Length: 140
Ligand SMILES: [Zn+2]
Ligand SMILES: [Zn+2]
Image (tube, rainbow, N blue to C red; front, side, top):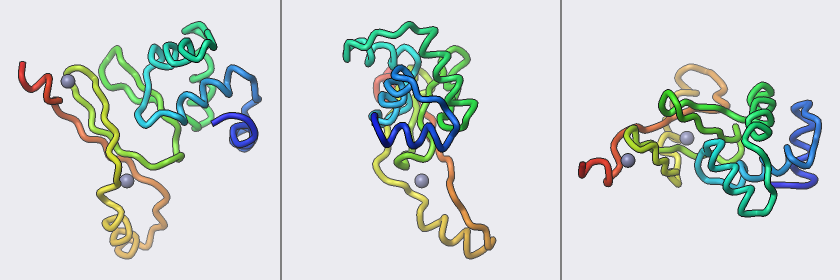
């Protein structure tokens, strides 16, 4: 995502629009899976939009502080970033190699409705992550 839509979202979250912020946000919204800083760096490089790792870190910090992006620590030295609330995806994460797969449907939509009826809450979101060993790591 870039351009007008992106600037709207920034405005709503009181984030000043810069070209670099737009680019990083675009990479995150185009991705099905949460990304590490290094992965964002490589994708930007492939698009010939070179940015230093420290610049990307700084931009992500702004997004995280404005609740636009969620940072999750998979392991002590690996954190991934994903945009909050755009597209609804669940993930399965390999705790050995850190591979992340996006699931293409939400398995608990019906449960959410039942839970709303039961608790009278208006549920606006939920988080669900699966952890395990991927086929490659299982073999070892
Ligand atoms: Zn694995
Ligand atoms: Zn869901």
